[in-house]
Length: 213
Ligand code: ZN
Image 1 (cartoon, rainbow, N blue to C red):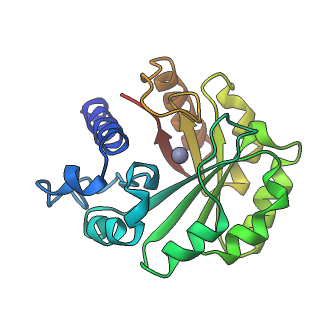
Image 2 (cartoon, rainbow, N blue to C red):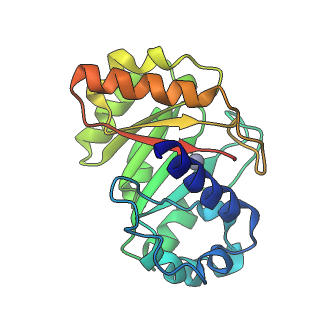
């Protein structure tokens, strides 16, 4: 069932986050990519060995559709991950689609920089800016795909007026900024509601899910 499939994907994502290297997990699963025609796999770079990022990416390329790049600023979320110089460096090592998830305060300050360092999709948080529509438009004006994310406690209906500006909506199933958290069950209802909203609006916007099992 679709529910089992989603659980399976969550399982893959949480395993990726918990392992020291992505490749340990993918090593014995050569057919993950392409198994689910409607589902894309976007492993988070946070799970890799940061001293060997280039190699780690090379080894997951054929198993993954996107590379999920989590950027944290220590303000919008308590943790700090990495920024533009790191993304620029790994951009030189791969042609993978960079799915950049900005967990940063007022992302409008940095869209040009993230475009320059090689993002293909830039997802901003609804809660991180007073001008989400302008930021989404800016991302698209740069020729990149635009995503909008909501935290677990944010009502999914806030995205409705912004849907025409989004290529993707990212529903967080844990509070952003910490690893190893338990999946928050009520977020499944938000995904369901979002699917209904998109169907009713006749939109083909992708739904992305980020969080624990
Ligand atoms: Zn993320």
